[in-house]
Image 1 (cartoon, rainbow, N blue to C red):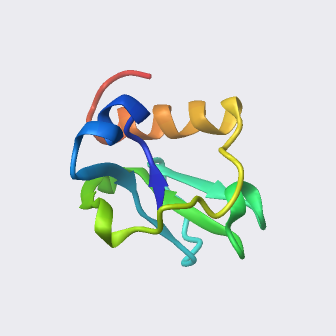
Image 2 (cartoon, rainbow, N blue to C red; image 1 turned 90 degrees about the horizontal axis):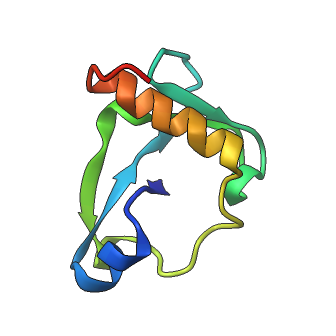
Image 3 (tube, helix red, strand yellow; image 1 turned 45 degrees about the vertical axis):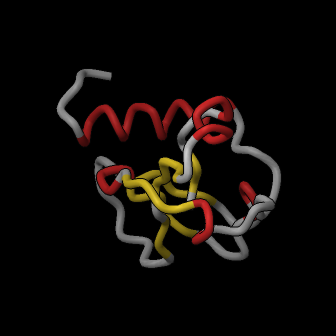
Amino acid sequence: MLVLSVDARNDRATDVMVVPCSTNLLGGPTHVRLGLSEGGVPRPCVLKCEQVMTVKKTQIDELPLGPPLGPARLREVERAVARAIGVPA
């Protein structure tokens, strides 16, 4: 899971906004592929940016798997989320 919501929101809310990921590597216009260890993932996966959701903080680990995604990859996520909701990226 990739946490999308900003720290200021996360500090005040009981939930966080996330994009789920899958190891089923089928591509799509709203999927962003992560390589092995990128962001700490233990194996290659895709972020399913059409499935943005909120989850309770108690349902996720407090510590991240690894370092944050880089700016270029985050821009890919941003464009994929925009495509999913019909906003030109």
